[in-house]
Image 1 (tube, rainbow, N blue to C red):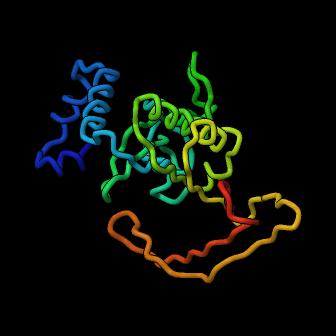
Image 2: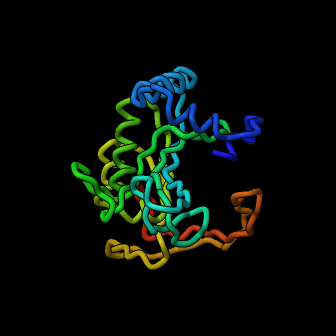
Length: 215
């Protein structure tokens, strides 16, 4: 809250805190208004969708669904809250569209149903399609790329194109007579949080013949 207040030029975050927590907004109406504005701005244009998690460290136990779990921006397991987020990407602009808080099993409340992060992500994608978003491509990391049952099957069901990561030790069965090929390693610059950059390496490894589904 303090960081948001700084961006807004406020000397004290207390007033902003009260404004956000005590305002009589209906969260569903607010969400629908925001989605309506985004769809109007897009005017039917296709977007790429990025599935990722956003984690924030939190002390104490007063906030619902806070637990010791992996917080991506910290790069370690810490006490905090994590949400699965569907971001839109168009013309170099990235913006959040839908999100859902991940509820660890040990934090479930009466009436809650446990869902894995890939299950949550599949639900977000399906909701976006029903809302009328035109999706050109879905991008996700290996947590989702290796979840065929919950995530990839949903993308296939919705007939969406996707590009997802898998880890080097992820098993893939090849049809008889097909082999593995790869191009040369190349470098690229990864933009990290807080303005930092890292040099990373990438190559394409193709398991079998290129087709609709290529590993």
